[in-house]
Length: 404
Image (cartoon, rainbow, N blue to C red):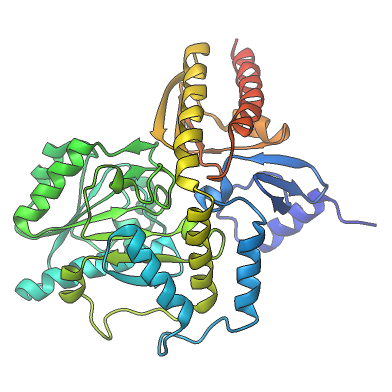
């Protein structure tokens, strides 16, 4: 007798630590922009592993590149050079305009490295260890202790206090609130170029330019978190490139490996020459040949398949379609976002709409309790947006009907 989906879920609940409230589905495989559960049901995926599978599932060239690398070598450690890491670093420098790269295993680890970089940079200037970082309210940077310390949501932090300390919080797109937090001890200002978990809020060009000027005037490092909004999701490889406002340090992950766990933090030559040195930072798996082979192939496929142009085109179409829902339904209050990182704001919790959509074969995710977040594979087409809209519109109608 074959095992049912519910039996698998029951077994998972006995074995896995309950830190996620998972949807009641067991996915088995993916193809293009679709997922399939173990019973063969097909789902249109507008989550892409939370902005990870930019190229969609089962891209043949990507898969073959990983298989080829597995047949060569997967890991050696950072005591030695490896060819994929050298090539990945070179390509990542080219697309980002940054100068130095440190490969990590995740976005949270990239944030940890960025924090250490800022503190070491400031330490080398004055020899003190009481420097401060300004981060943003409603931000999200990860679940490790350092990343939590700069995450602007007290609910995530309160059970794990004390944090690393010397972190002040300001408001995104409110330059005066940032300026008010600056002291002689400020070593870095950190924010997501587009806030993701916090509600899909893009930083404005005016805000970014003023913060950049402030950092230049006071030799403060500008750190931009591009973990979710980077790698083409807004129509440029990194969201700050829309305005040409370059950070001193940048973090990237998620779609960087398109499924293989890998992240990185990058910096300018000035920061690289005046911060972390031999013995200051390390990782066993970071920059391993398999992960870096994934990066190399991802970046090559982005260029070959003209992914950025597709994001511009399909992202604009998605935005127009979501705007229709704002006009059509009283419960839909606003659409926010850039490219294929969009949010639809409701006047009520959206959990039941997302669950209904899942039942009808559409995978969505929230950003907070009242926002549906749209982070599909970057290779989706207008026809996929149309299919998504049919299901979403019906789910909203049903949810509205229940409220009456």
